[in-house]
Length: 110
Length: 112
Image (tube, rainbow over all chains, first blue to last red; front, side):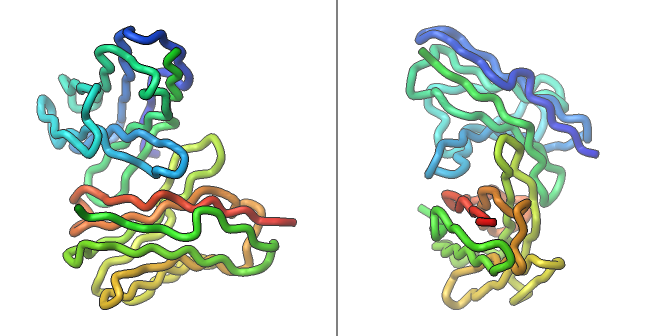
């Protein structure tokens, strides 16, 4: 079974804090993605990566950055968390076709 | 820009009845249309997909239809069961390896 693991299911952070969300996949997939999920807005793409060291902006990259130093790991970074970044964050990986998602990280910024 | 509209946002059906969720896309170059199901508290998972060279695809109680001329596609679930309760997302892209444009999701409620 493909496994995409997100490091934290629930996080509570304060405004201005730096936040790291980690994602690891065990299927040697080239493509990895970070989505944000909010009710009524569906899945919005923040950043994606087609290979190690590569990153591309998605639809809503403002306030976020990413890092992909190893093929299996894709990290999402909030340099200075704000309350409007309170959301569910979903990581996904893909070789071709089907996206495999992690369980999600619910971030609350106070 | 490209977008995918999904309706309804919430659908409540009696157990055993059929459910239909509809999506309309704007990019005429779209050729790949997957559907993902997300049960409460769980990750989204692909349940069925269709490519533009096919008008309909079935997998047991689930079917997807595509009308390229009208640029819309639909998910049909027959003989609904409690385990069908979930949020369903449609998406579209030019190719299965391209970025997906997602619909906003439909919450399907199966009433006992």
